[in-house]
Image 1 (cartoon, rainbow, N blue to C red):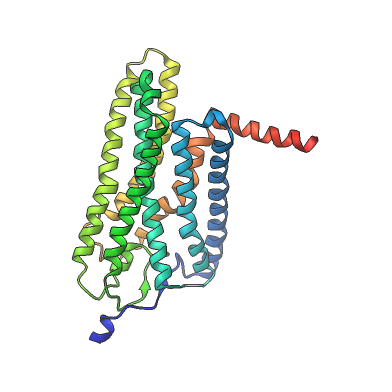
Image 2: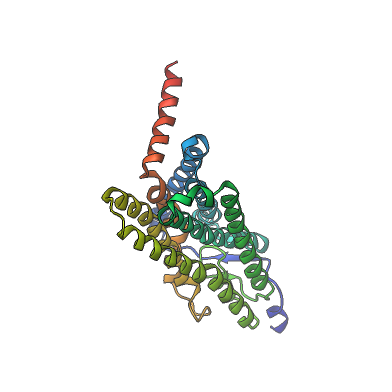
Length: 312
């Protein structure tokens, strides 16, 4: 017994969202449709921003990074969910580790990207005359690199602490290799790992959302003082879109990772995680981009160009 508790398991068994066959079929169809929407929506945003020169601006540069992150984020997990609903429940130890590394990398990156986007909005609204000198191509690139680097750092720390533990059980009460779900299987004391995850959560969730709230405080104060009703409406529309995405992503992330007791199995934790796994990646293209006039114009130009070439 003691020898088994100190050994690492070769593979894990993941639990599906439902054990009922009819519900599994419905969920499979639903998740497949959602995943296709995520892929098509985010790929479309990336292609439009890459091909249309008027969209080569800081705001859309960050949006393209966000879309790429969302696309990879869902691709890392949703195919696993579809496999579970198709009764393939096993995942190797290495596969589980890889999934967690990618999950934490992209999740941390998106947290920091949302801060970069809020800073861009702050400069655009509060310092419009200095926008071009502040948000230079070099600054945008540095912010993007910092976002991906912060995600990589969080992933490295959390994954290292999580997989240094011995696991005597191999049934994960989740639909993917999520850090807190894995901790419940550990056969050793998890206090240091829980503290490491908590500290990283504060650094990548609470600190960035605080910066976003401060930037929005300044933005709202500036917008209220605007004389132009049209300018006020445009500013609120742009910032409102970003705020919705922020609330959905950070709200579900904070709700999941800032809980004091990670050992207690909570079924609703799976449901909450669906917000940042599938809901935000699906809604981001609609909320942030597809309702934007510039993006709509780029889409019309792209479809018009294809129609014209087909006629020729």
